[in-house]
Length: 436
Image 1 (tube, one colour):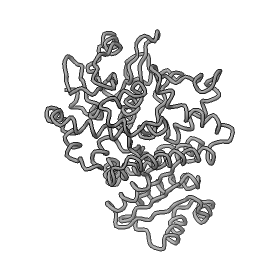
Image 2 (cartoon, rainbow, N blue to C red; image 1 turned 30 degrees about the horizontal axis):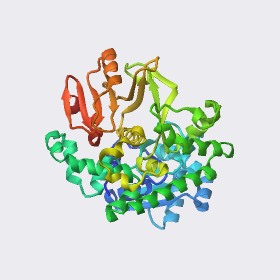
Image 3 (tube, rainbow, N blue to C red; image 1 turned 180 degrees about the vertical axis):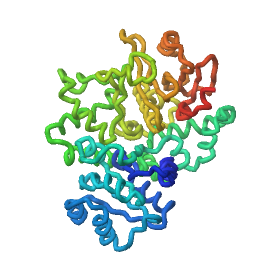
Image 4 (cartoon, rainbow, N blue to C red; image 1 turned 90 degrees about the vertical axis):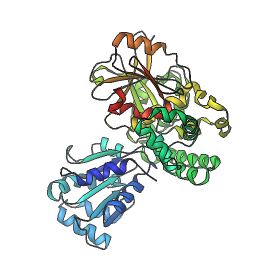
């Protein structure tokens, strides 16, 4: 299974400014596989250490963090010499031994020749609890479920993925039914690696759904095992309420939908927990379109999306037969699946800040506003081929952006700074040549 993140890891390996690397991401998005595969491809030897329930490692790191002593202990545990020029050292579930995270500072300062990659299912939460290691001593990489392009490659459509990268939209349009059919499959299967691998091998939608149910069950168990006891009930209420929040015409998160009379301060910690462990994406509102967008952020207004479109469909009970109902699938939940899909693809794009826009009166809403660092691009999302976009028209008249995007099931078309971008090509939004 190909992951784009492998290319990023290869660049990290060759960088003369390399620091110990921390891979963040939700449980079961493929962090362990990625680290092991990277070691297999790029190193002569991989030393894999899982810190979960590992009393030997807990004891090793409990004492002083002298790197020579730690390396000796790691070599004794692994049963072989660790060659800094040829070995990849993997710390998995590293959040279980917080002092191992702290030690990364000393590896960077005193033993920078060693190649160290770390990951953990709840690492984002461990970091936000104030685990002691200085900012600036480690590199970070976020891992998400497979993108649609990675899904194409995993299911035997590598050439179609290459065609998207080349932006040959005339040829893409000629094969659009293949892309549309694959997109329907992706809406159901999503990007969780186990689900994608099962589908690629068996094409069995029922088995895919069972895998998704098991993943969701594991997430629910994490709530009880790892979240503070006082927020677990609220955590479950927020998590289970995401499908209904996204089913609304206006997808702004409404606390009152969780429980009558609910207030932000009661649920803020639960929402933060879900976002920190990678299970949810919080997309906040902006009320203007200047650079940087962060300066116009309204932290009180936001949309809450799930980590994966397939898991959203599973929670909402999306049936397999919808795949056979033409484009009706894309209109289900009033476009909730489509917005979830677009959000999920945008989040995989590096150095892309994602927000949404409404004016102060609430009469104009643009589904997503992205900041590429060079320009602000409004993105209106349509579930079908309907190209009417009143809010986008209003936004363009007010802010006059260089380029605007309407993502829909219609074919690619560009005129007067307005691009109709097929949903299956949404990841091309950050490509520089796209705005030419």
